[in-house]
Image (cartoon, protein in one colour):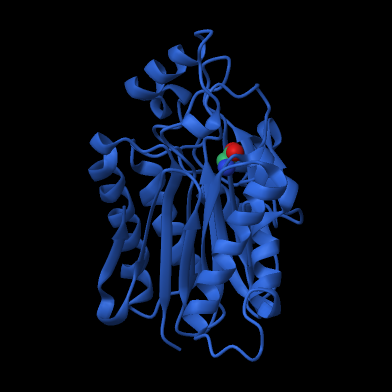
Length: 308
Ligand code: GLY
């Protein structure tokens, strides 16, 4: 099977001056994931590598550079899901984990549970020899300045936020399909708030019979429409977006599904956001309703396609 990879660095109001930073982040995610897949590596390793690179980029809202919550602390959420078994590993509201996607993978591989939060997640990390970090190393000057602004009475809501969640979906040469998502959540969020990102079906879903999806945007809206699972259901049975008599290509159907999902997010949840996906054959698609979304995929011949 031909491997495939798509990643995103978040949907939001990305200013012109920051576009190159977002492109840099997306490129590093693609390079990290593709270096695994192009050598015949596993989709799980590719998603982890891509998301670690995205978490390490201080311009993106995941790992280092995450938004701060109301109390000026970083609380991180992440998930990885395997489309073959439908098994996932997720962590939420962790504060001392530099790369939460790695801890999510540890939960996926070593826990009898699929989601651990807060202190319990960090205890699981310690018990399994996983390193804890100093929470201060996750906080950038930019994020702290932005957080100060949220304390002003005129502070805007999520739609105005400059940075969003990160994610990746990979299909490997053995046909394994894996999706993952990682986030610092919304700027100025209430302590303990968990958004869509680490929740199966909301911010992430993978089913090898349908496709893999990672979402970004206003979590409280994405949860209302269970957007990632909605996209998977449409990919499985695209009748609503591509009537059987239509001659749409698989690529066009995947794009129609992505667009239908963000339309429903706006219509039914009155929320803005975006998603990336691979259908079960590895065809990529992306859609968003925010001013911009940073994303990229590996096209024919290993060429990187990056937006914006
Ligand atoms: N989509 C990220 C969040 O709302 O937490």
